Length: 339
Image (cartoon, rainbow, N blue to C red):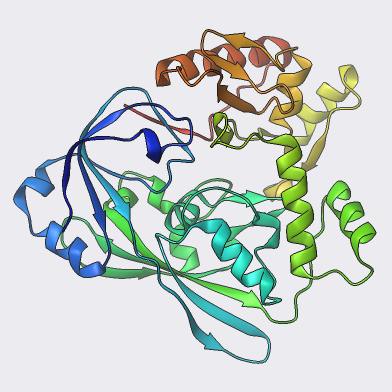
């Protein structure tokens, strides 16, 4: 097993923060994780599961063990006339998986194109875009318990999925290390085109669109709005879209009749965090080495490559304060702070 000491995490987080881990352990199998589970030192140390770091902000060095999946299984688990189920390793790059399924005409993941990160992290975060979430496709999440080495497969209802949430983000769930995700795709896809902009673009592209057509339009939209982390450090959408009661929306519409809003579970309403930030005049705002992306206010960036995690966090706090003062709405980070 490859165990690295005092390891730089700069290449393992999309903000490009030059934090360091005491120990960095890439693992390639369930057996390696079970071997670690029997190690007393491993049990005593803090641990962090890190994929591509596309949803993490390191505020300081990480004193403990960072685990990085290199399990790259991608195989058909079962198939019938309607569905094909894939067993996917937690270390598979998420967008590689989406490209693979769309190229084969399989429906279900196309709206989640170009989202960075690994498959394991996607299942933990319950990634979503354009009305789709990975939880809609999960058959089971396969794990190893980091303390006992026990194998456990979680059914969707056990994952406690909600908006950008799962059981694995809780204190109890954090002890389960995702090794594989079982995903069900449609062989006769019914495309999910709930967003008007995407629907119009896909219709203009093809009269009989395929998952690949939707994928290409999602990619085009994302590239027009979001910076490439390889060129400008960022973690995509920094804040979650706030969910409010309908009565609160009605109040806001009295002053802001054009406020974007979308249906949310349990009769609630989802607002656009990017729109709220933009209306505060913060698009393009720079604070030290950190900035609000000029083309999408929901994105915070490492402007010159020199920002620390604290720089990004200070900017985030400023954005939250401005939105609170202007709209009375508290924005919650989608990005996870690591200290």
